[in-house]
Length: 627
Image 1 (cartoon, rainbow, N blue to C red):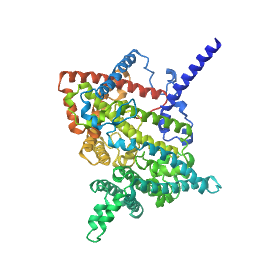
Image 2: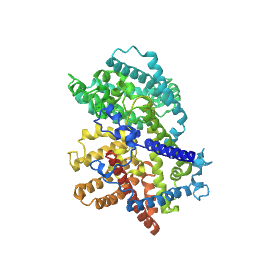
Image 3: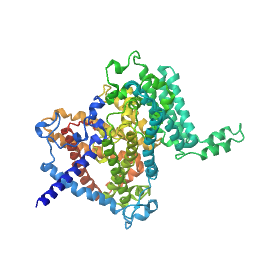
Image 4: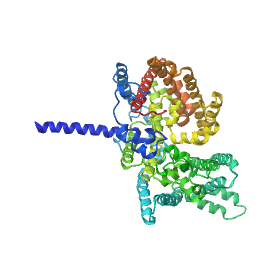
């Protein structure tokens, strides 16, 4: 009997431990400590907020932080919402599962786009060339993730010198990291791009000369004109192939064409270097602008000394904004180490120069083995989720086969679009998280790019802040604020709208120079405007006495926002304008389609209410996010 009770206690303890571990893996603290602490909090203090804080259960009503509301999860209203979820989510998945079966009448139309899989004896939808480039190279990237940090440790052991003080230790750490990053960066881009690495280095050198040799007043405009010009030139000249250059010089050198062909034949692992160079453009602009702002400050005294700050425990805001030492800016080797830093070179997240130098000098206290391990487990679970989807739902292959959309039911159409967006979300999330994991293992903590699930967004503005977050922060620091901010930033609605249009035009062209993405950028602005106007028309302060009514009004607005965001992202990253037109036509061309649309809007309303309560749950834990 005693043994039976002991076994029950062990099972209960194991179950509780497993639940706690899962909550820790999916806590905001594991994702990024910036989400659970203020950007003004010194890093050593921020590190004291453990993952346990982020996974605590809801607080009692009397202990709620200011601005948080009591929990609604156990109310009859949310009991109904739970029932809707239990019924609708399996049906949503079943809709795309049915059209992804070999027995489906549509299967033969896209079967040629499928590849041999490894799960459940099924084919895999590896037809998205962008993600396939990452997926097919995961084993080699995994080796690199292990070998690169080990090589750094070996380098530090071989070349470290006797440390005499904390100051010399910090400068030694910066020098050692910069030297290793410089060498490993050159090796990395040579392996990636072969002889085309010389083109990358040429662009980097010209950008560096703009910062160092031009008069200060001309630096910002010259930096922006040069780098935006490079974006267009890279696209138009298709990466400046050596054969094209040789053709231009052939009249002056008889063997030029043979030399050009030889150089192009050694293009490395990624011969089309210009495709992934856009992320490097952001670092080039960041370096020059950080240096420009550093020159405008009083160099007579360090901001750290003036504010009496501990340089080893700077807050995240101070790491980003306090200029790096002038010697770091003027060192071409350190500049290349920053721009070519291997873990973040291909896809980011984006780290500005000030932050890179600060973290290279003093490792961020947010980095520890437990948090990095939990983050790695979370990445692997996300990777498996993607594999599960690609093996069981062939939505990408279906959209690429140019199907007759009218042959699908309205429910199937909407789910094909919805799951297509999920695959797009995952195909970008996974590489970003892999490269951030690599960076964390190597001792640098960049911003987490994606904070919310694609299905946990009801606001166009919030979606933009939480999606590609490091790019959003880059836009705010280097483009949006210099333009004068936006609505609510003291510039006025008209000026703010113009600024937003300029920002999203740049964002669209930065992604790729084509009309489809330009339409996406402008649609985002168009869909954000109703949200801004609704916020002005229905201020929360006027509804304090009727919170439930206000929540219902917000739910209606959220349904509209979700529909518009889905449309904009389908245009930009999936089916294009013509494809969206075909989808919408098929959805509303019948009575059944219109009826389904009404039901779908009702389900989206339920989803929006759950999203609202999820954010209230975060507030009850003392976490106040703006997205």
